[in-house]
Image (cartoon, helix red, strand yellow):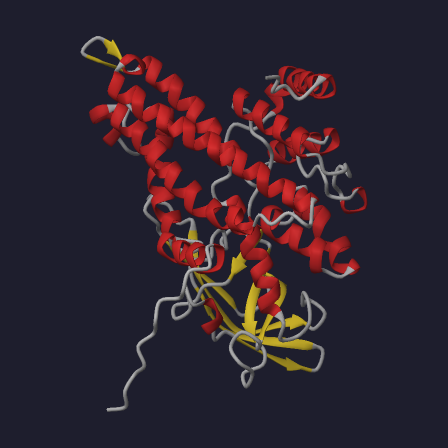
Length: 398
C-alpha cells in the first residue's frame, strides 16, 4: 500500500524543508505578540504561503487555493523542526475567518491585513459574571444614540485585554427580544474612553486574562458585524473557529516531539525514561491520540472544501479531545522529571524554561474555558449523536 502523497507533494515538502533550513535563524523564540522580529517572521511566512495561506491577497494574505495536503505538510514540517509557525491569537484565528464569511467589504479592508500582520491585536468580549456557559444570558447593554452605540456593562475572562488594540464584543441591543435574538456583535478600540481593565491571575501564575468594565463607551454605528440583533449567528461562527484552535494538532505534535527528546535525556536509576516500558506505554498512547487528532483535523478541513460532507461531529470533538490530550501530555513530562517536575519560577533545575509546568496548568484551565468538557460532552451527545436532552424539572410555585 502506497501512502505517499505523490511527486508534486514531495517537491512541495522539499521546498518547506529548504525554507526552514535557510530561515530558521529569523524565527522568534519567545511569545511576544508585538515584537518586530515576530512581525517580520509573520510577513516572511505570508509571502511564502506558510501562514494565512488561503486569505485573499487583497486582504494581505497569500491568496492560495485551499489544499489540505499542502496545509498538512506545512504543519508537519514546522512541528518536526519545532520552529515558530507564525502569529496566532483571537484576531487571526477567530475574527479574521468570521469577517471573511460575514463582514462587509469595508470591514475586511480595514481589519484583516493589520490583524494577520500583527499590527492589530484583538481580545474577545463574551463571558460575563452571570453569563458563562449560558452565554446568551449576557446583559452588557448597547443603546443606539444617533450614529453611535453607547455600551455599559462588564466582561470577564477577557484574555489579552491588557495587550489588545481592539475588542470584538457581544452586547444586548434589543432588550425586549428573546435572549438569543437580542444580541449584536460590535468592534471597538480598547483605548475608547470608558473602558477599565483589571487583571486576573490564572493558574499559571500570570495575568493572562482580565475583568473588563464599560461605562458609557461610545462606538461608531457602522462597527457592527452582521445585522442588529443577529449577533448570536456571528457569535456561533466565532465559537466554531475558537474550538478548532484552542488545542491544534500541529502544536500537539510539536509538544510530543519535545516530550520524546525529554524522555531520551531524563533518567531514573541509570535508565533512560524512553526505555522504561511503563513510560513508553504512556507515550505511545499519547502518540496514537495525536495521530487521531491530526486525521480528525484533516476530516474537518476536507469538509470545508466539500459542502456535502458532514463533519459537524468531528468539529464538536476537537476542543474536548485537544485540551484533555494536551493536559495529559504535559502531565507525563512532569512525571518523567520526578521531583524536578515540581520546579517553578527561577529554580535552576527547570527544564524547558518551565514550559511543561506552565502548559500543564494552562490546559487544565482550557478544559474549563471556552466551553467546559462537561458542556462539550453534552453538545456532542445532543447535537452530534442525536441523544435526548436531559429532562428539566419544572419549578413549582411556592
